[in-house]
Image 1 (cartoon, rainbow, N blue to C red):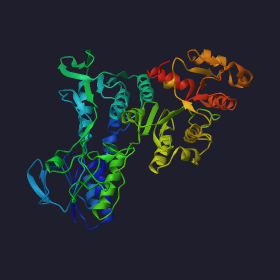
Image 2 (cartoon, helix red, strand yellow):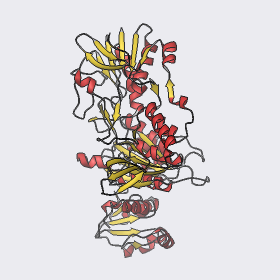
Image 3 (cartoon, rainbow, N blue to C red):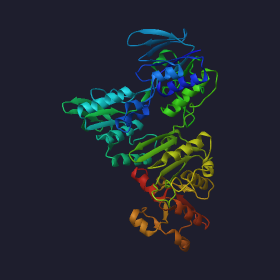
Image 4 (cartoon, rainbow, N blue to C red):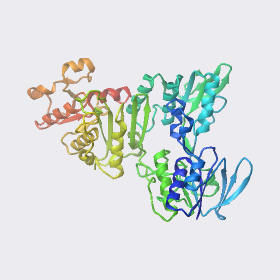
Length: 544
């Protein structure tokens, strides 16, 4: 069987190498229009920032290695420009010629291309491959650039802002949307924005790039708010679009969201053509079609395609939760599944809780706080989770992602047995605590509300100590009765209206809620306490 693979990097190279491991007989030809067939595209910003120092470290597998170790016929600088499905051939263009190549099975992994929205010109760059990276690196060195504007606040935008700052440049990050980092809800994204600004990046939200003009002194950028800034270079990180031109021209089915349609086994509408990676439409966390351009799913899809070419029925990578992580200097943000914005847009009913656990046992020195948010439904099925902190953040989300992948619930979070030693975790891990809180809420032991549900009429009972209120802040109009004397002051509280019980982060509020409910009060725990209230208020989400 002769298999042609169009495109290398994650999906194509993974498919090619696994196919060889499964079959010594397969004839494998991999076409890559660039010079590098398998490279660490997720590492490109870190090369620009000097974290990755050697260009060679960006190359995962060279054409020579793929040829010698795997007997794969790798042809770089070779672009497949058309597919003849009836004849089972592709037309290939190289710098020297055009020719046709036959196939028995064809795999499309061309990836996705950076969106530019027509913004271009000298000093304007995108970052897709090693060549783009070296071009930008050379420009910055040759021009002695001191200032860079990064357009777009997604993963690449944030990583570029961090790494160009590490390089010693002054960076402005301009994001057209009201917040950076779309996978996160506004209050969680705010913490990542704080980290960027603390690291020296100027972050401007609600501000996109309208026009770019090369001037004698550098580059003049006109922004959508009417202002203009002078900079030395512009890096566009405005998202990506699946490269479907080849598939469209061949008459393959394209999904409504613009990706190549594939079935659960990554087969396209043509039974002899498969596709994988950023170019395909997958099934997202909500069970609907989605575009999820991440390296992990692309690698798993490539592996599945290799097995399915030989008659397998693997579907690994077709259903994608979107588990992801980003770093902004000393702060890490990670997420999985859907966020609150998406759930609201779909009209999906959900519940949510906030917790602020320490990264490891509280009595062990050096623990740092993690801000966590969990979204789940009435049945306890986990819909999504987000976490931001400085250490052990991604491992919390990884655990939740594993539970979601196995169709687990919040009850399963409470029952997980996870590694514990004082330097690494708490005996009741942050993930366990999310499960405990959600289970208490679902069981009616501690009904919950979140700060954005507070109104001017809500009766708030703050059970913190008076000194905390003066030091940290107060809830407007709240009644303060410290937890340890609460039982002595029950006659001061109303039984004819709900009481929102609040503390600093939630634990004392839960204890107070249990006391009150067992004494006939309609007590409701304020999830996340004052810390959640202050965070949501900063994000403009609190009415009171």
